Image 1 (cartoon, rainbow, N blue to C red):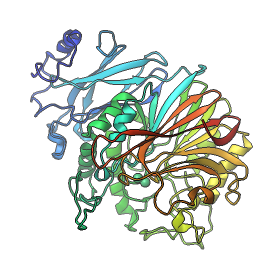
Image 2 (spheres, rainbow, N blue to C red):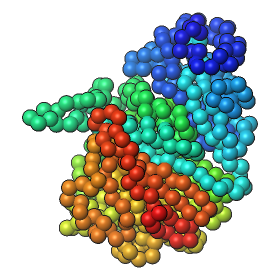
Image 3 (cartoon, protein in one colour):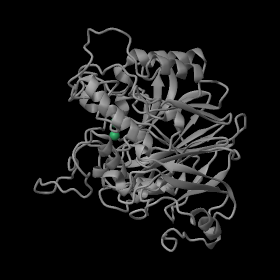
Image 4 (cartoon, helix red, strand yellow):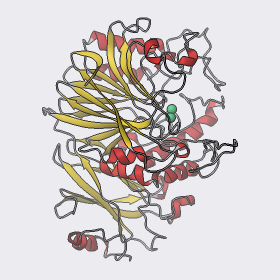
Length: 522
Ligand code: FE
Ligand code: CA
């Protein structure tokens, strides 16, 4: 037993409990090293608890992460204070080789709207400590919520400095992760070019493009070793979703961008989905199954906020032809209705949007508002991987918002590695006409590299898109401060990511009111 090392975190007060839990043999062999190298996480808060996550990995990049191929017991503790003097709940889960020795403890029986601290114990070691807030009680009036938005964290494109700053944001209730938690490509693809054109990788993926379950596990392990990402997880519950790079660039439904036969792509997709489940702090309702994984779900925060977490990849119809590098696509002659969410999820969403909540947040991945990029302005071509490639599906959702008379719908989006804010017009041909919802698009954590405030050649973007109010190409994140009368969005950037230690800059603070979609300066 290694009770004398890292295990004995700062506080002497925890010693008695800690020793009590680990003074029996937990399994036959001792672990190859400290098992909590990938940190801890919490997710999907309910009024009575949340999910606590960790994954044992003494040697994270080795096959099996250096774990014995057997089930290993892991204890968890939840306390009302960071020193664990008031432990209010504890339990044990098995970390099984079938799930990459990940642990998902679904903790209940706690009090609503309270901050808690948690940790895991295994193999005579203690994990780092994380903190998490339970959701408010079902019908509670809630004064204020603080929700961060982050995603698109290409490890090779830069340091996760923005996560360090996000982890220091006060009083977060949750962080919505819009996807691209990992990128699937071979090592060395995204490396800055030097003066002479040679590429230098300052952070490089391990290995080739990922296909197998072990590949995906190792890629997640490499990302999760990042201390800034670990700090963000330890600071707040994540509401985890995926976009494309958790599987393959621009995949939808049973199709990847290379046009691989669907029955083969589905094997890869299943490995990717299993690895996603193993590595995300999600509930048992998201357990992977061969037919696919139910990612879309709903989280309520009292009467103030209903969050609809959407899956805009798995149930889509194929992209319209015209998207770069995509060999399989939907020809223009195909006039059948298009699907962005699939019929079942679309009905679930439109049924669930409700005026009983102060706000409805559609937390999803790709831009819902039409958006004209400088490069496509001449021919008026929109991004066919976004909702603009699925106009009729978008129109159905907006119509449902209109039918219910909802003016309190906010859409949170990622994907484009830029900050934008604007409204989703009821009619895509009338950009500054009546609007159905407000949309905040959060930039990437690292994808795209250092960036700049306004990219070269993007000077006309705001006038070409009169329904938008913000454009910024820095890396960073957003924080929503949500109250009954006002939704405030802090747009945060970092000045660089290709070297560590980038400074945080406040790019803008924008405000939306529940009576009418719109984005206003604070
Ligand atoms: Fe991305
Ligand atoms: Ca993406």
